[in-house]
Amino acid sequence: MMGMENIRKKVLWKRINIGLICFMLFAIYLSPSSGESINIVSNPGFESGTTNWVFYTNGAGTFLNDVPGAATPHAGHITITKPGTNVQVYQKNLVLEPNTEYQLDFKAFSENGHDLTVSIKKHSYPYTNYGSRNKVVNLGTSWGSHSITFTTSGFSGTVNDARLMFSMAPYDATGDQYYFDDVILKKVSSVTPPVTPSSILSNPGFESGTTPWIFYTNGAGTFLDDVSGSGSPHAGHITISQPGTNVQLYQKYLTLDPYSVYQLDFKAYSGTGHDLAVSIKQHGYPYNNYGLTNKVVNLGTTWESHSITFTTSGFSGTVNDARLMFSMAPYDASGDQYYFDDVILTKVSSVTLPPATTPTPTPTPTPTPTPTPTPTPVPPSGNQLVVLDVTHTHTTKVTYVPLLREDISGKTQTKSGQGFSKFNFAPDFPTSSLKTPINYAGGTLYQRIKVNTKPSTYPVRYQICLFQDEITHEQHACSQSSLLTFTGTGTYYASQPMTSMYQYENIDWNRELLVAMTVVKDKNGDPVDNVYPQFVGNWLGSPNLGLYYPMDVRYTAIMVPPGGGAPVWP
Image 1 (cartoon, rainbow, N blue to C red):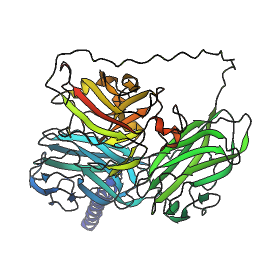
Image 2 (cartoon, rainbow, N blue to C red; image 1 turned 180 degrees about the vertical axis):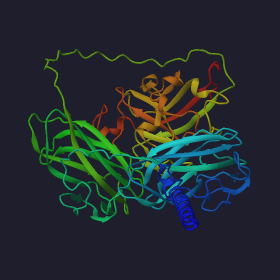
Image 3 (cartoon, rainbow, N blue to C red; image 1 turned 180 degrees about the horizontal axis):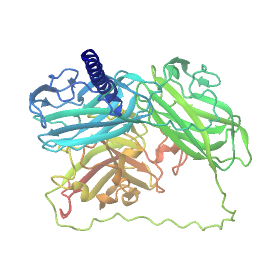
C-alpha cells in the first residue's frame, strides 16, 4: 500500500511541475501575440548615450545626453552655438511597411520655445517622402508630449532605409537648447491601398521600356528607363545634353470624351529643380487645345506627386487623336535630368452643358484717365516694418535670384524677370513670427511706387506676393493688384488690411517667410509675361513687351500693426 501511495505522489508531483512549466512557456512565448506594437526606434530615451542617433548641422552645436528626461535619468540635449540652414537629429535605416499607418510619440521642448519639423523619408538620395514631410511641431518651454500619425507612401514593398528626422532649422537661433525623450514609433494598422482607376495611358510606370512614349527635342538629349522609380524598378529618365526651344515627352492618339472632367496624376522631379509644362492637345495640325495648355508644374529635386484636373474642350464628339505632352522648354538647361513615373490619366465625370445663349453686344466704353490717387492723411507712426524697398528696372531679361535659405524642395535660387520679379526682404525683416511680439500680420499693408520711366500709357496693375516654404502658388499671399494702378510716371499709393490679402490663410504668419515677388499686370489683371507659357497672348498688347518694358520704379511695402497709424516712408 505504501508503494502505491508513493507512486501516486510522484505522478501528482510530475503533473504539477509539468503544468507549471507549460504555464511559464505559454507566458513567455504567447504573450507578445497580444497585439502590442514594437517600437522600431532604438535607444528611445537616450539612456544608452546618443547611440543610434546622429546629429548634423551646417552651423555649429553639440548633442549629448547630459540632462534628465521627463521622468528618467537621461534625455537628448542639443545646444545651438551657431544656427544653420540644415540642423537635424535623426535615426536611420528604420524598417517600414507600405500602405501602413504609424504613430510617432515623443516628448520635447526648447528653452526659447522655438519649433521644429518632423519628417519620415528615404535616408539616401533621392530622399523620397515616406509619409511625413516637414510636419511642424509647436514646442513649449517645458516638457510636452507630441503625437503624429501618418500613413506610409512612396514605396511598394517593405523598406529598411527610412530616416526619422527632427529638423531645428529654420527655427534655430544662437544659444537655443533643444531636449528630446521617449521617442516611440509604432505600427498602428495596415491600410488597404486605394484602387487605381483605369488609365487611358499605356506603360504609365515605364516598366515596359519607353514604348509608347516619345521624346522629341530640337536640341540634344536621351530618353531611357534606366533608373528606379518612386517605389518601382523603373522610371522615365530624360537627359538634356543641349537645351532646345521644343523639348517634350509625349504619348499620342489618346481617346477623350467631350465636355468631360479628367484627372492627370504623375510623379516627377528634376535634378536642378527646373520646371516643366503640361498640355493636352490635338496630335496633328492645327494642334487644337483639348482642355489643358501649358500648365506649369513646379518640380522639386526629389520625387513628388502632382495632380491636374481639367475639362475637355475644343471638340464636340469623342476623339482619338489627343496628345499628352510634358514640355521641358524653356526651362531646360545643359546637364538637366528629368524623371517621370506613375503617369495616370483618368476620366472623372461628364459635364452638363448650359443652354446656348446669344450674346448681346456691349458698347465699348470710352476710357477715362485715372487720376493719381492721393493718400488719406493719417497720423504718422514709428512702429512699422519695412518689407521691401527696392529701386528696380523691369525688363524682358530673365535672371536667377539667390535665396537666403533653401526652400523645402531644396532650391537655392529662383527665376526672376518680366512679369514676376523676386527680391529678398529688406534688412531687419524678422526671421520669426510676424504676429508676436508685434502683430504686423493683423495690421495694414501700405504700398508706394514711384514710376520713374514707363514706355507707354498702357495701364499697369502692380502687386506684391510673399512666399513662405516654397515658391509655388499655394505657398504665397498677395496684395490686391487693382488697388495700385497707373498709366504714366508719378508716385502712387495703396493700402489694405493684411487679412484681405489673397490667400492670407495659406501663410503661417508665426513662421519665417522665404522671399518676396512683385508682379506687373495689365489693366485686366493678366501678368505681362512671356516666360511662362500660360500667360503668353493673354495680356493687352501681346506680343509687344515694349509697351511695358523697360519700366524703372522704386517700390516700397510697409506693414503697420493695428492702431499703428500711417507709415513713415523711407
